[in-house]
Image (cartoon, rainbow, N blue to C red; front, side, top):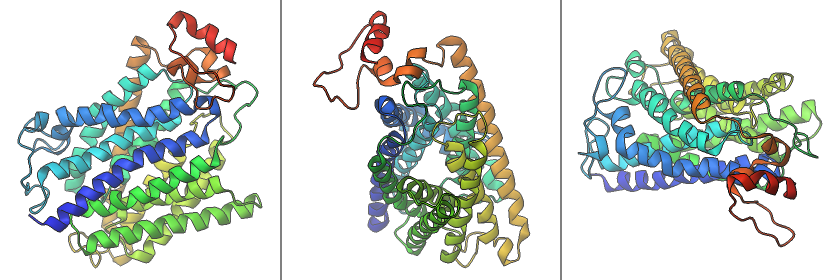
Length: 427
């Protein structure tokens, strides 16, 4: 047992857990005041729902030995997952620590999707959605890429910390969810407006950036030079994206916004994630810059359509993950990580094929799985909230709470029959 590596992995678990509350603040700052509680709750509830699902069955389906498509049932209920190392993943860190680290990834991934549906999806439907999405989409995909015998990993595709497993899957799923739910109605007196709290946006992005050092650095599964390299590429990827985003804003609008810089940082972090432990340090700047450029252009194109991906999850996480995964195939170098093949820049164009297959497979599987889950939920519990959520905000309707109470009144629990009248009164 390596106590230093174990200590670093335990620290990384805490860092990655912090990313989900960070995401909650990042998202809630971007929405209107009457959607803040719902937006925060959509991220926070994943800490409970997905952790239980992961311990009960998810970890086994994702990481136990099984077939090329799905893990086996040997670790149901964490049976056999203890404080001893498991050579499938590491010979010097506790197996249960590896499980907990991967649990944090499983938690934040469906929470990312919530940004596409905030303000208009029934909370009950959302809870069921993330539960079934974790079971039916995330767990198999994690096994394909990272599990023993997973078919995408067997092709030689590289994904250091979740470019395809986390960001491509969440981004594409967000796009599908936005299409299935349809656009929001116009909020009373605000239309769609802008961020209601820019400091929250910056705070959330800062917490995500901080936690991402564990997200990528912890994926080395050791306190060694590779972990240090991943921390540096994480910093440089985000920084390159921030500089690029500021330049794009100044060029096209004449102003650099705090919100834009925060979004740019998150896009850069997304883009460097699949290659953090595979590409040279300076290549991370290029990957961050290209990821930001593609996401910025995607936002511009989608803003001219009727697609209502509320917080632009596909443009940021989906496109960032796609760009980063493909560029990993360009810049990967065995000099950084001797266990991998060189990429296109170092004379091996063949790596682009598994990278492309991984992106396409992750995107297609997530799209089909998300659509299927949403259509079943719509036919059973229903997806959309009532028209009052569009007009007055979802917080009172779904949670009987307000984020900001300025007149001394407090929200109280109400029955279903009282909801509409209360929302109308407070509207």
